[in-house]
Each structure stands twice: as C-alpha cells, then as structure tokens.
Image (cartoon, rainbow, N blue to C red; front, side, top):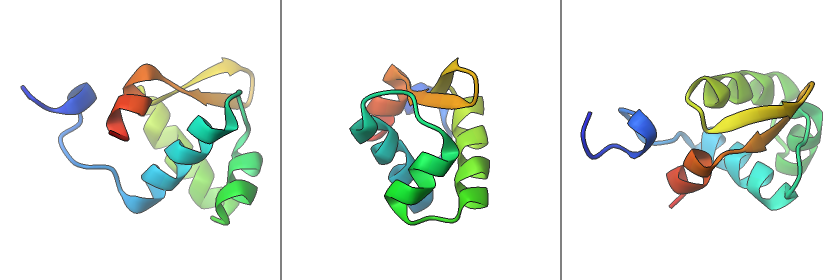
Length: 78
C-alpha cells in the first residue's frame, strides 16, 4: 500500500511500541527476557510481539536468540 511505513497496513499497538522503544534504547541485540524486564511486560507477550515485529522486518536477529531494531523499526516509531 502506497504511503504506509514499511508496508504495514496498520499502526503499531502500544505493546509493539513499548517493545520497539526498549530495543532502540538498549542499543545492542537483546533477548525477549531482557525486553520483558525493561518494559514490565509478560515474557510470553514480548516473545509473541518480537515474532510479529520480526515478520514485519521491524526487528532482526543478528545473534541467535537476540534481536535488534532495524531501520524500518526506527522509522515506524516516528
């Protein structure tokens, strides 16, 4: 769809925003447990959110079981 950031058809949910912000602020690849502790969200919720964000190319996995925010992820926060 033209005009949508990174091909997403809807805005980020509050949980998606919290998770992306935590990855951005972390500054290095982090695991779901680290992000759950940083955000206060349930680890299962964070894991599900990470999977969804990775599928939408907002997160990548540069290290096994660790994730980092992509350029598209940073742009989605703007």
